[in-house]
Amino acid sequence: MLFPSVKNIKNRLIESKTLGKLNFLLKNRIGRIKVLVLAFSLLFSVYILSPVTLKESVTLTISPKTTTSEIAELLKEKGVIRSATLFKIYAVLSNIDEKLKAGTYVFEGAQTVSKVAAELQKGSTKLITFTVPEGYTLEQIAQLLSDKGHIKKEDFFKAMEETKFKFPYIDELPAGEKSLEGFLFPDTYKIPEYYSAEDIIQMMLNRFVEVYSPQYEKRARELGISTLEIITLASIIEREAQKPEERPIIAAVFHNRLNKGMKLESCATVQYALGEVKPILTLEDLKVQSPYNTYINEGLPPGPICSPGEASIKAALYPADVPYYYFVAKKDRSHVFSRTYEEHLKAKEDNRSS
Image (tube, rainbow, N blue to C red):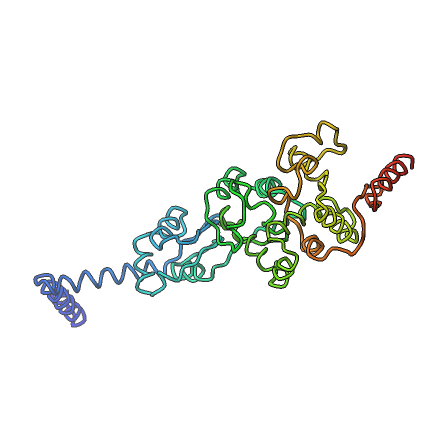
């Protein structure tokens, strides 16, 4: 064909105008900026809309106070997004950079930036459930959490000793890593995976405050006993009472002995001093040198020997009105209660012969 068609001429004119316009834009500063903005916008749009397809599920844990920059780097490292920088820009432009929440997230399949960002605003979290039985010591609680694979025992006790927890009775407590013995309330808890030892301890202290009501505080004042003393007594009741219905009676025995200036002579306190629960205590065990040994020390020990449940706390506050000063365990784990030492010796003899 000697001459181009009208259509070809038209296309060439359009191309010439477009190239000319582009060339003009590139020749001046404002034009160059416009081109760069246009190019970035196109790139950014592709980045936002184009999904990353994950071959395997990715679990990501974000702790409290993690910054948007740190989250972006973590997402990039895990392969959930292509660019940490562009994710940060998206978060700022979308006004969500301060709305990303701590939690444990699972990403699967195709993930766009907007989808990832939306998920991170939910605070959707995997929860760990654990139960602290009534009568557990700090050592047992730490071991329980360690067995769950959540925190190390040494981290638990380090937090116990070094952290200043928010707790209204903190000034009453003895110093040292076991100062909170008895105050981590036994209950079933559900916690996020990212919870630290400090978070767990504070949560359990908060639960204690919820349970130990103003009514209980008032009753303790009526008895002339501090919160520390009530929980210490309740912890001994917790370890001594094997039958729920006997708690108020055992509480009465200890109250009666304290009021009369008698030693408590609680086997549970000796076991705590020994650091182990022995089926039978020897005479040497009863002489162990420890402020917790109520066979050789008068009054209450320096602090609780375990975490008592609410029933034992109530028993310590509202003991039964009975004249008993002694009790001895039977084979069925119930107790025989006595008013005098002679009755107590007879009960022990009867128990052995049966």
